[in-house]
Image (cartoon, rainbow, N blue to C red; front, side, top):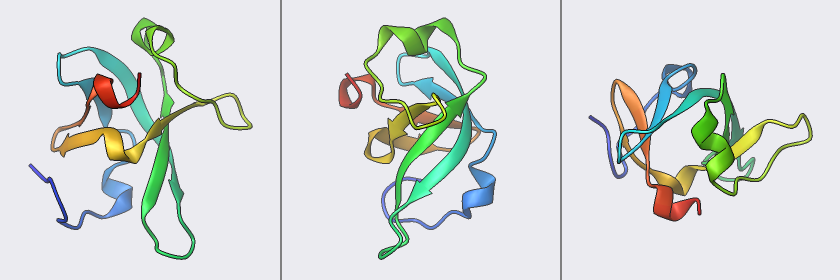
Length: 88
């Protein structure tokens, strides 16, 4: 499981299931939004969303897709695990 400053290929994040640390499934990783100067991921969109996405106050991109701040990611493995506290 990757955490901290380990490097992961961005294509390995696409379509991974996004869950909260309490086990709620939010959907799957869609697009990644990068800082063009640093190359860091700022946000990612969620596709195939579940009802839990509507329970949190997420911003939307211009396409209407929900944006999750990448700083809310606490672990990446079989799933992308996010902290609900960081997105509320």
